[in-house]
Amino acid sequence: SRAQEVPLRLLADYRGYLMTDDYAGYNALGAQPGVERLGCWAHARRKFVDAQKVQPKGKIGRADMGLNLINKLYGIEREFKEVTDDQRFVGRQEKSLPVLAELKSWLEKTHPQVTTQSALGKALGYLASNWSKLERYTEAGFLPIDNNRAERAVKPFVIGRKNWMFSDTPKGATASAQIYSLVETAKANGQEPYTWLRHVLERLPQATSVEDFEALLPWNCSPEMPR
Image 1 (cartoon, rainbow, N blue to C red):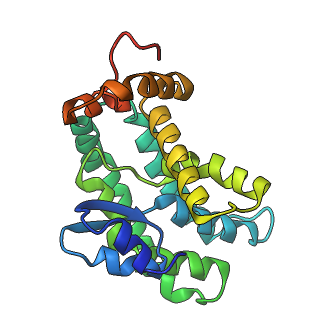
Image 2: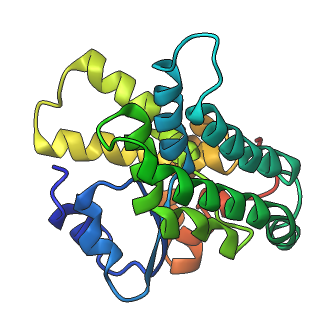
């Protein structure tokens, strides 16, 4: 379920950055020592897109102003997509921080002028209540601006779940989740899933040490294996 005890159990020993939306079920985990919670700019941006849709057609409104500034942040990310983490960090300090300062100033001025229940009011409220988490991605070059990569990774599972309509048993659901996790991790590390799984299954019987098992992980794959 999405109850807060589930992420607490699954990530009981995790320490580091954790990106989520503002769902309250993550609050307990985010309050754990050593966990730094990040906000997802894709979620924030989506709310401004929704607000833009209900504006009078043909007119530029406040939603456009907020969306334009968020789009600037994404433009900076595209500019530094292929650089090192250190270079991305410097680029964000030089270019992203001024845009964030401009966006925050606009937010503080605009938020009190908009009704909270309007689409724009909800977008501004989301931005205001999550600001410290949203700007945290600038703390390090390896931190992503949003969670889109992870959401794309679970999309095949979500599509499949809608098609097959449930797993027959809890064990089956667990096995399915584990296989999907292996496949998506292989893809994230540039491996062709079938080739990598075959590589692993053929060598598992001979693995006897921690080093043997670690050598089979997709990021430690032997160079001669086809990618």
